[in-house]
Length: 100
Picture 1 (cartoon, rainbow, N blue to C red):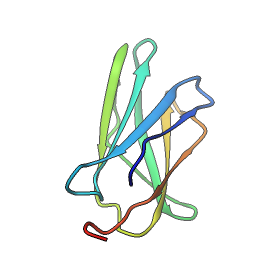
Picture 2 (picture 1 turned 90 degrees about the horizontal axis):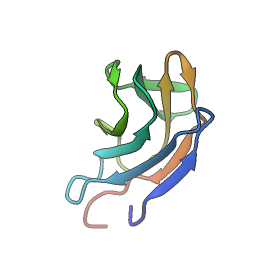
Picture 3 (picture 1 turned 120 degrees about the vertical axis):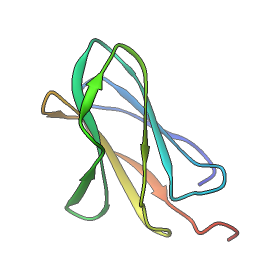
């Protein structure tokens, strides 16, 4: 993955993602949190099947979540869930095998 992708979500939160420099199946999702809430990041690489990061308290300011276990050569959708409200998803694009 050579570039970052961004999207404005339904919760008015701009999600950004970046693949790890060496291990491209690790994706870092960042956003600027407005207010304090509980939430988590959901991600899908199989249509209709969503995985999630642990739920935690999200505090105002910059937030980051590392997503693990994403298979190579798959498209990934990412969305943020805050207080049970799901954002629009963004597509992180295909996770490529290193060295290809």
